[in-house]
Amino acid sequence: MNAGMSWIYLGIAIIAEVIGTSTLKSTDGFTRLGSSLVAVMGYILSFYFLSLALRTIPVGIAYAVWCGLGIVLVTMAAWVFYGQKLNAAGFIGMGLIITGVWVLSVFKNTHEG
Image (cartoon, rainbow, N blue to C red; front, top):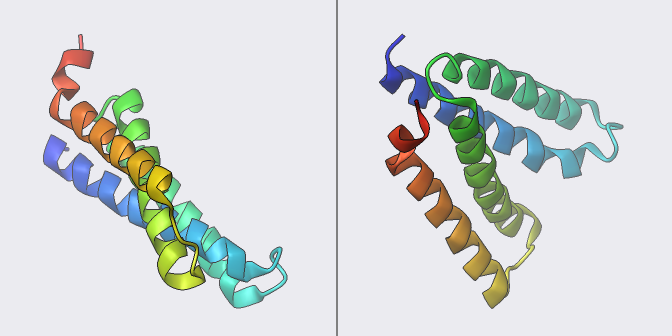
C-alpha cells in the first residue's frame, strides 16, 4: 500500500469517528436503536480504517492527527447540530490543535528513524 492511500484511510477513519461521536448524544444512552447503530458503525469503521492507515503511517502521527482533527470536527458538529457555541478561548484552543496537527503532518519524517 502506498503512503497516499494510508492518508485517505486516515481521513475516512476521522470522518467515521466524527459521525460516531456526534451521534452519541442522540442515542440517549443507547436506548434509541437507529442512532445507536449509526454510532457503533461509525466507531467500527473508524477503527478499521485507522488500522489500515497504520500500515504505513507511524502510530504516534496517525493517532495525533486522528484525535486532533476529530476534536475540532466534533466541536464543529456540536455547534451545528446541538447549538453548543465556543467562546474566544475555545477558538484559540481549536486553532492550536489545528496548528499542532499541521506541524505533525508536515514534519512527520523527522519522527521516523
